[in-house]
Length: 574
Image 1 (tube, helix red, strand yellow):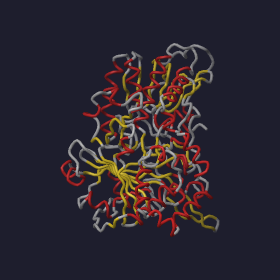
Image 2: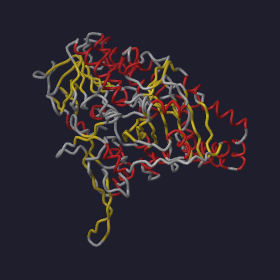
Image 3: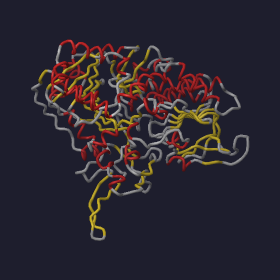
């Protein structure tokens, strides 16, 4: 089902030749994140005239990530293959240690996940998207200008240009339509091009995660002391259990060069079902006693951010193309989130490079879908699709995600016998092995058992009690919004509320990361109004504090699109 971006596209009518009167490039890449940068770099290396269109004032100004980028040994491309100076110039710290904490109140059982982390891993670095993507943009512009193209920022591509029903280019808010022999959509999880082409819809909350993150100031000396790392080392901590009000998901903490990335990632359908508020779930992590050892009493939050994350197990598109359009990265649902395995940017890099190679191999072919078919085949043959949509998960979910099975498993786990079994040293060793098994992790059903029940029981039965006093006082939601940078597009709201009833759109009041039921300053607000002697709860919308995550497009009845080029929120860290 096509989204709102389809209304901006144009069909220029009949004819077999290229439509006349429009600027033409061999390739257009939409978005200059890792996937778009990889595609543009490979195209330029092959001498392809490539134009890159970026919606932000600078690449990265619209982008958010939890913050780890991997180089997999089995992948055909890694980011430093395409940009050799990447690790020295654009990343934060290598991640050399990896842990998961099972939390039950103040009791915690920690497992070392280094074996899982290092499986098929050449290296892994923590990154911040604004500095990383901005660096990539400079390199991409240098390479694409050599072939007659370049990078244009502050340009929103709002739809697809069609001729006789076939995709031949793109339409923009700021520019006249542009035609191309191939269009590579690397425009992120809220891809207007994927929706326009009918390759993505926003109908099912269970197909998405929502991530919320705080970037926390901390100098490198303090990081070294509190996390016991050298300047060329870093650590990743994951959190699951009962500290998140029963919502399916977990938390993370990654060490950067001069800051920490701390956040939460939850299944969107679970967030809605529990009526949980994202900023409060983040605060629950920040204020837990175990965080005192790392955060101390000098908590300084640099930036608050949020984004949607596609669940590749359900939405990674097996045929991510239509006509001359191919999708890469989040636009194609290529975000791998399987238990403690969270990988997205590396898959976007692989996909972008493969999409470029596919076009070069089929260059000049009269069939408009030849590049797309070759790209889909290359994704499959490279093993990328098996990582994104593992067949063993498809088999496991048919049984493991049935309510009757989940209820039976949880009944056993929560029984005296189940708790006693989990409390043994043998079970402890088996659990550590299970957590470090890529095979078992890729089969993990998306139920509360793995995210909440089991970790909480492990923490309760095998954990140690922490008694630290956590003195962190997180900023209020109002303060967090106020610290963000916005260039509001006055008179051009990018979201329209179609149904203001609480039944249709009320979930946005608590699921939106910058809204809350008791806060009147966010995007979505609910109020009781008198109508013909009866009281009705209605929802109102103010797009000014929007962080453009897209949550409301799924949980509320809205018409949603990105702001125009350079408008809206601008992330400094990302």
